[in-house]
Image 1 (tube, chains in turn blue, cyan):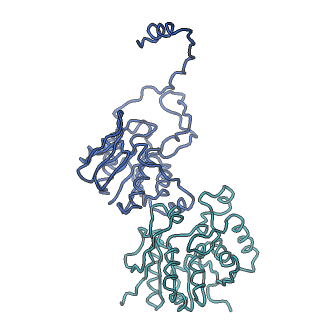
Image 2 (cartoon, rainbow over the protein chains, first blue to last red):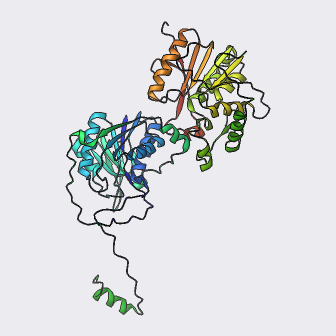
Image 3 (cartoon, rainbow over the protein chains, first blue to last red):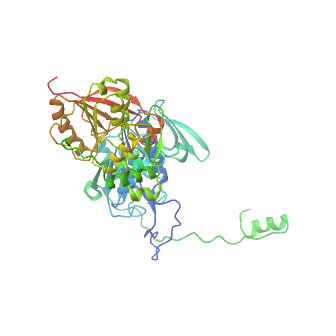
Length: 252
Length: 225
């Protein structure tokens, strides 16, 4: 079984992002970038499939500037076999939208014919959470999103919902899965694996050569920081609390 | 008389200083069923990384592990050999095993100077008196150097290198030498290799080789047979 995983280069989760001066985007200059945490979980799942002999090959795909190759190298160091870099200078946090990403991935899948595609459930920059579903739709294959556990033998997925977890069955492969937090705990890429990853192959394509509409369906009007949290107020009695909740906060 | 293509480093200052650095940054680690070896931690400190570029010798590779296990299981492979070439020796595991099991002469070859010095250091751990000949020549494409056993562990990690290595080894095997290849089954591995034995990788080896759970010892057969 060939597994394809999408890995996105995003602002590192620990960075305190700042809004650019023109308020049109987040300031990315000199900011630490890393693999999207949900993509790490996706790669880990794929590598475990290879280690359990369920998969024979893991291909890591990333869309972005030249530096996206570093993200692919991290996937290779975690155990992926080879990488595909789709080059674009469009900003992947807001200029390239989910539909464009899904269209690009669908073209890649047409060439690679994976039996299984695993993506992160969402990116921590765009947070749209759409790509997996859109890709499944374009490929006309089943989708199992927010996966907390995938059983390839029973063909069931335990998925996260707001009310708890539910178990769904998928009829067949190929299928698209999106990884949620509980799916696994990703391994670290250690030096021996990083050294070996340098020798693995990464093929580069240009997004504009794929014959895909890269224009975004959204236009970003403004990017701003959430308003500062205001100071709280001490109340003396329960009546005063109820009064404030009713008259000032308007929540009861 | 120096054997063609073999340089003996032991007396040079550069070699001694390299061995001293290796001994300072690596520690002797003895895993189950393995000889003690100078190995690096999974995440070496900054100063180690600054000093050594891509220290492949600091880790045991799955292919040489498979060769080591196969020779132990089949000791006559080594004891019947008069001259062994460990091609791409890294830390020298395959060389040490071949010599310990009775091969008369073993040449540990790696284009990385630190690797052959690590191999020499590993040959001297504890009470060892193992003599290895060291070579840092790029041997790919060189005509038969007179060895009767070639050990090639993890030399197919790269398609281009793998193709050149395959062509060279096929020439050597035509000349009558025995060629054993150790590999966890990478993409560039030529399908013309015959699998002799497969070994499960122990946990400590899986950790440094994400994605691989086993490694095979293969034999390159001559085209005629």
